[in-house]
Length: 339
Ligand code: BDP
Image (cartoon, rainbow, N blue to C red; front, side, top):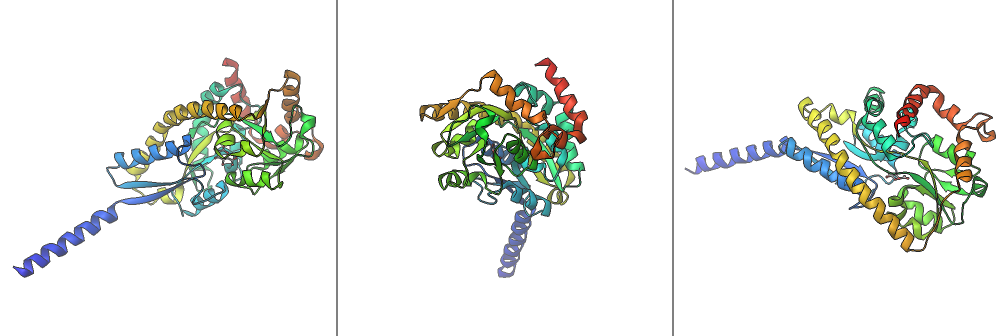
């Protein structure tokens, strides 16, 4: 009897170990805090992955930059297979997949609908496939909204001339640094989005650039109170996976992951729309100076991107970063004819 009991117990132990090891736990890195639209979307993605794989795969979301404060760190961790997923801005991905710049050139889109027609259409879906085919070790799963980015500074900017001499924190993307440089400022990198507030307070930089939600949610609007609606870029967010980690999974589960990611896009867009409005209200209520550019001043910002510039050795930003992908840029512009 005692022998039987021991046998049963041993068997139960073996079975529970087997069940536990059958579930794979994967990490997802996110720079934004709990409650931010992308974090909510990550969590929805995690919920759906677990549900559809019937518990075979669990995704743990690490928000607030707790794993990697800089998105380049997260991207490199994906390449090494140290983590499975990261929700990042498309901007730093360009350092690994240069073609990604083609979908985030300054003043490329007429409005959000234009961008979404591109991302949901052939161009955007091909770009996701290109990330996977690029040999970067990254897999592009889906796009999320991140609105339009504008400059915020410690003194008012109403024209390109006002940008002169301003040190501006930029994302890790050479084109974005050059964008600020051709406007007369100095683009600074190496500062994570969670460090911008203190860098402004300490005077290391005079400002940064971002959408309403990040400007508000990171608290930066309390350090740099001038926000100029120059709306220089629309940079979508992208949910990335590690090719190395996916290659270890059952191909059927990889398909589920890819499918489920696409299903979270609409979820994020809804949360985004709510947050964008709420953040704008908070920033305005706090008494920040919101500058609307005159049509002439706006045109000047735009023109700086296509005009030859001394800081780029006499060529324009579009020439330097767009010429290899002119077909994609032209196709995006053509889609814009409907908007
Ligand atoms: C925000 C993006 C976030 C970027 C951040 C940045 O949501 O992914 O890390 O900008 O400027 O809008 O680094």
